[in-house]
Image 1 (cartoon, rainbow, N blue to C red):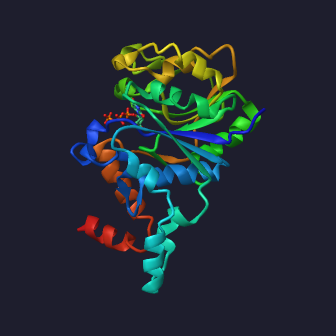
Image 2 (cartoon, rainbow, N blue to C red):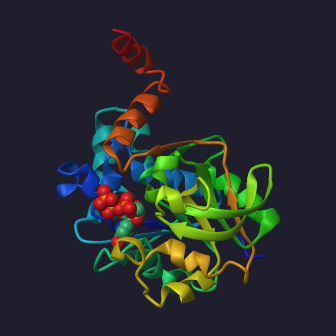
Length: 284
Ligand code: UTP
């Protein structure tokens, strides 16, 4: 079994739910407390053993790639002023190899993944959607990689979603379950609650085998007229092991206004430097 050395970060979406903030700023550069969403996702991938970061970007997303550059001038200025350089973390610690590929048009998540096919080649890879902020120790992807080492094949991260929210998720048709691991018999993208095979919703972490790229190459459109990753993954079921796992982590859907604000509060309350002030304000 090949290890998961590569991770795709699809960051070419339009982020319309967070307009006007995302008009000129990539959604993934929005900050939760003191760091952008993309950094949380990259840190999670590195912790899971990922060596190569593949950003699928689009128009107006250059700042996402720039963020991981060394910032020599800033370092120098902080040095001159005798200031702590800890706050520059992303540009100072090793972040592995960063490759950026372009999605010319936002045709859907499946299409964004397919744009990275030449970089992933014949290796398995992880996919992390940075707007799904997962807070866990160890991180969500590390928990999935540990499961992958036993199960192999394809693994999606899943959680129970409210019955009236199935139309916002890819939903798993479940087979046998063993603890946190459920065999995947089928998958449907954004079903109406009445048609949903379960309430097990797929959230933004995946470990996939390279064959999914062949399925994506058909460029078939699905729900919402987009090229859906769920539809391509569904075609692998029966040909390769496919499991959903529930990780021990809290998920914040930061692609949505409520989730974004709540994530700031939740992580702010975990930051000893500001937690007291936030708590006092909320109590008032
Ligand atoms: P979303 O469904 O959150 O779409 O995409 P979005 O465009 O980012 O945001 P809204 O719904 O308009 O507010 C899930 C992930 O897939 C990426 C997004 O960047 C996000 O990380 N994506 C989506 C692409 O990279 N390309 C696409 O064509 C669509």
